[in-house]
Image (spheres, rainbow, N blue to C red):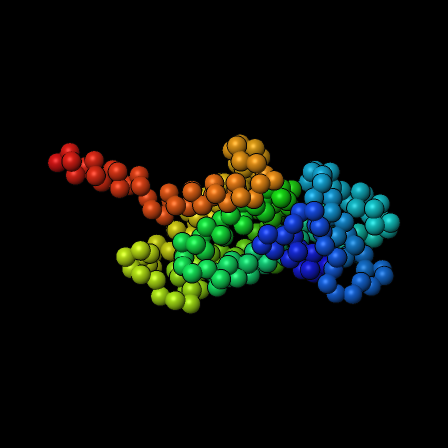
Length: 240
């Protein structure tokens, strides 16, 4: 598969009904590694991560279980390869969103919304991509893809991706020493929102993209405009 199926999965506004889409490149009979990846993606769309096993995958691909290990060291390695594909495409998507956005605030809204919608549409794959696998830090492709994704997010926070200069009054540049912390904060917020909504802890219908977008954009507005700090500052001023 390399990246074609994963790219279709995480593309912005990809319809769940057509997932997974056909491969872009030509299919070659006997490409067992490709078949194993595509079968994994298909199962994860409708079943739980816990339902995956080497025996299940090889039975569906119609090869002997021992054949699996000619291509992957373990099921965990296969899943980490898929996760790395998704993370690499997430990084590309963040850059794409930034280039199509008029300002950083709009780009942050679209990026976090995309993250949350991905978790709602592909909850089991979201579990694979974001931290539910063992030894992920030792997997070089996954580790590199994670860093590239965060670097893209940091560049978005720093405003490096935008074609125009933003007003210091409406969207001031954060101090350079704070950009990494802000990036971590945004990622933590997106990760938390995605998990809460995807697992039904927030009353936002999964099938309604508009409701998800409205909810996420409101959260981003509260985060970026920081009304809590302004209220505290005002209260202190009146107190003195």
